Length: 284
Image 1 (cartoon, rainbow, N blue to C red):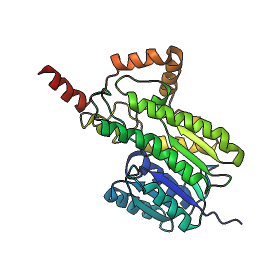
Image 2: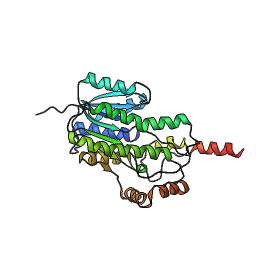
Image 3: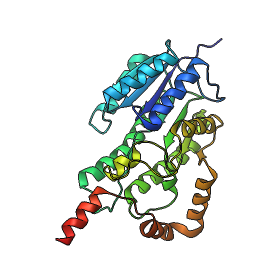
Image 4: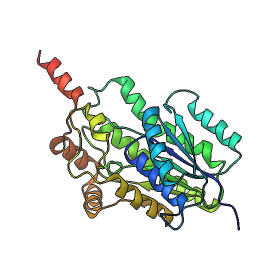
């Protein structure tokens, strides 16, 4: 029987869906969660900025699967050279990459002009360049059966006023995923774009600058991740969970990008400390 060795990589693994992905993969490796189509691996690599949060996730996973080898990389992947370090570590490990989950990313609520340039560029960098480069690095270490999961968003299907850059970055990830899926399928490598609506994570708090702790109707991250992994295991290229989100995707298609952007700007404005600060300055 062929030994099921390989590396599973999760970015943004210290909290939210990233931590949920790590938990699910640990259960899959331990044999307590069976999802057809998911390749085998014996190492789980977790990447995130916050080392203390990463250690808590590892301690939790060790209780689930004591024999699973877990490696932590407390990296800000937007910093120069960090992705090349990951490549070097893969070479040193002398193993194939079985699974890559590009989960790291963030958004910024508020108008484009009220958001600082450095923050905009970091969002663009983390949401687009980092996953693109990581796919480029890891795909050369993949063989037939490997899976790449890119976390896009329901926002990928329409431009959004007041959330312009984030929606654009997720549209990029959706289109990149679909394009790569057609190219890599001939090699037996599957690419999946997961496009959820609001999930109960720290996303809203970060995006709003602390004004919004959570989003109404946010989905449980463990449920979201389980849905994603099942769809990826089936070889699906795109998945949008929950009927309400699929209906919103249909409406975006029906009314088109311009109407969608104006509707979001007029009726779905998200709170942002940047806009509050900007309005205060303008009123002086």
